[in-house]
Amino acid sequence: MTSQSESCGERCHAATKEKILDAAEKLFAMRGLNNVPMRDITQEAGVNVAAINYHFGSKDGLITAVFDRRLAPLNQARMAALDIVEAAAGKNSPNLEDILGAFIRPVVELAMNPKLGAITFTGLMGRCFSEPGERLNQIMQKHFEKLVGRFHAAMLRAIPTLSREEVFWRMHFTNGALHNSLLTMEKPLPEWLSNVVDAKDYHLDSESQVRRLVAFAAAGLRAPSTTP
Amino acid sequence: MTSQSESCGERCHAATKEKILDAAEKLFAMRGLNNVPMRDITQEAGVNVAAINYHFGSKDGLITAVFDRRLAPLNQARMAALDIVEAAAGKNSPNLEDILGAFIRPVVELAMNPKLGAITFTGLMGRCFSEPGERLNQIMQKHFEKLVGRFHAAMLRAIPTLSREEVFWRMHFTNGALHNSLLTMEKPLPEWLSNVVDAKDYHLDSESQVRRLVAFAAAGLRAPSTTP
DNA sequence: GTATGCTTCAAACGCTTGTTTGAATCGGGC
DNA sequence: GCCCGATTCAAACAAGCGTTTGAAGCATAC
Image (cartoon, rainbow over the protein chains, first blue to last red):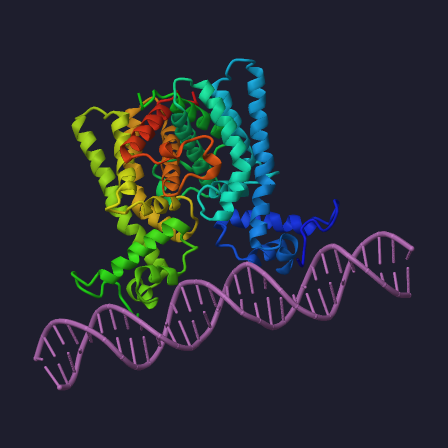
């Protein structure tokens, strides 16, 4: 009861709040959610430790705010992209590649756009599927329920030979491929991979990455059913 | 200098050490590496807190031991499986599906075998690709360098139309799909997915899971090159 | 029995964590 | 000028962390 996050009307300072969000996003992405003390965040942001509890209530509140700030517009963009390809297809089903592009491109572009989430968001996004905890579960529910419902339906219509659960699993695999690449984008090439891939091929521009992911996922989704 | 892990020759008690390893593996898998206090581990194992530092030197030593115990035989089994399919193919390249089976089946079977790592290992395995930190990097280097080298070469030979880095990325995507499924195996179906998939289809037997993964990955790997 | 070396234990250590406190500071409205 | 709510700050708080300690247990060898 000591503080409310919406205490200042609309054009609040927002400087401190945003500085904290930026610093937290960066550190969470680099070191995971649970390896970042609040004192590191406030030091990176150049503010006092108590500012987090004042503006966000708790560290949990900050974590939620960090994810909300990115996931809400991101998944809105993905569904808007799906709207467009579905409208363009009229009453037919859109191309599978177009559906996958709507699913994948906004993520990769956000992840690689230094103006927006910057490269720091990649780790965050990947982490929200790998870190445990009830808090992240609620965040995921809020942001992903509608999204997976819509894309599952679209993919089911695009590949009518597959069953519901087969489409689900292949969408799940696609998501795994996507977020595994995001997790590695932020990091330098590990030495133990240098025999297999050159450094110049390890960090791609976003459009190449989208092309690779869409081609891989589309082929995987179109594979013959394994439950005949 | 107060303790050495190899202090007892060969047929040591091993009871305490193994109880700690089992408890740690279970808790690490459920809650991540950094959310598990040593006191929870020792309580689950029914031993004293100091036993961890006595037998493993530190919590870091315990983490390393937990991963080593599973990853060494696992990746040995994957390479042995690759040996078999390569020997069977003679001087030809093996089927891509057989290569992928050697890559995937031992993981899924270990993950789902309650006699071995039990279901608890799934989370661990997935987590070692998602949690940050230099320690896990070294563990990965030790256990995965040879493995990815061999499988990359085998896949490259099986799909000679693809470039080295294209094979690398598609192997990376495959790995993401595999470990994303592992991460979700341990957990119950989240409520926000219940509109998309039935609970009975969310937890499969290991052979069905392997079939799905191999079919998806093989099709994805055989997709036409995106860098012509 | 006694001595020896490995193992276990309860207790405490020093440190870091998230959070709270109460005073200081700021900025506009009268 | 003065006041008032919002914001910032240094300092302290209690709880939890990984680790260390020194004594107690417990086999085996003599």
